[in-house]
Image (cartoon, rainbow, N blue to C red; front, side, top):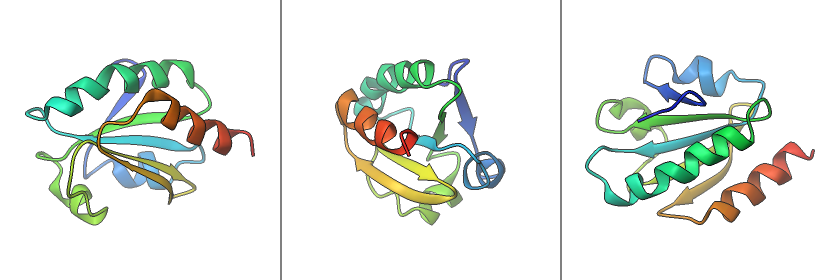
Length: 111
């Protein structure tokens, strides 16, 4: 589940919160039953706190928001996508170490 720094995104809010955002947005596509997704959650929370004000961080429950999951061809979870100006800047499939996300975020926010 999302925390105070992590947005809970849905099919209804995705366009406004992510694609129309002026800030980069890191989106974690996950599901309640997914073990690796639960293992990734603390990393997502940590990144959300660390990059607060520079990057928005959100989570999409793929079971509850199938339209968004299908739109971005989510075939395996966890999948984390970094969006910048409504476009996919980087896509991570599977459980990734924190440093991978930070490297992509630092490269994007340094521009």
